[in-house]
Length: 366
Ligand SMILES: Nc1nc2c(c(=O)[nH]1)N[C@H]1C(S)=C(S)[C@@H](COP(=O)(O)O)O[C@H]1N2
Ligand SMILES: [Mo]
Image (tube, protein in one colour):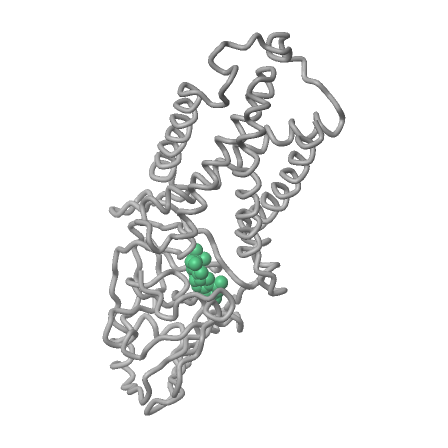
């Protein structure tokens, strides 16, 4: 069966590339490495995924027709692979077209995408090792041997029963994924009245992040404005604060619900310091010296935008932007510049980090 071996090999190679790039995207640190050398891992992952889909869809019928008449072990491998193929494809597409997909479903898709991968790995390792070392597992005889075929699969590949099994397995998985998402928040806030759901996946485009020993942080506001001011860490607490409870959404699909955030309305900050902007645009820079994003001045002044310094009643964690990050409740997480230390009013609009490297929308409204 030469054609089968060829397909198996192509499939194996594409799958490995996809799994590796996927795992790299999953890890906070590994994701960062590739960003730094400018290798767009997301695009790579998606491109391979499309290729992979093509290979599966083109060969599924023929392979299935052949394997489903083989011993149960082979049939199982085939169905197992197809089930996961559907889980990854459907959840992947929902993530890919996330702008058109409601948040709840999108979040479920992220969970299904991740968890189905982890669930798949033990099988994959067993399968690969058995193949490479030509090991047969001591399955019972009936499982290994050529089965006596029930008449229903003599001619057809997937009969209605198989199809229904496949569907219900996928459905079950979606349900389990949704359940996990809403009931297993990794960080639960115990004392708070507001219960946060979900957790932040820490996203930093740099490996390291700024730390401010002795709170030696300051925010500089300047550029095309009536004056330039510098606001120190302790000044933050002299200004009127506002607390909001809001959902935080990352454009890649995950969200955190009911996050309690405390900070200063930028409008209040500007009026307290008597700052008047003389331009339509403003760029917010991070103290990591890499990340930045731009806004319309009115988005920061007339719409509720915040300088956040507490999440769930605690100062921001160092990785989450201590001492403060920008936050606009109607915009995606990428507009929430962490370790923000400079706001600069400009004549023309600057493309932010993700607009330059990821083609993200400038305004980033949800
Ligand atoms: N300085 C800096 N700010 C940043 C980022 C970053 O990489 N660097 N990532 C942004 C993105 S894409 C998201 S979704 C959120 C993630 O917030 P978290 O790391 O607290 O989960 O931070 C935003 N702010
Ligand atoms: Mo994001």
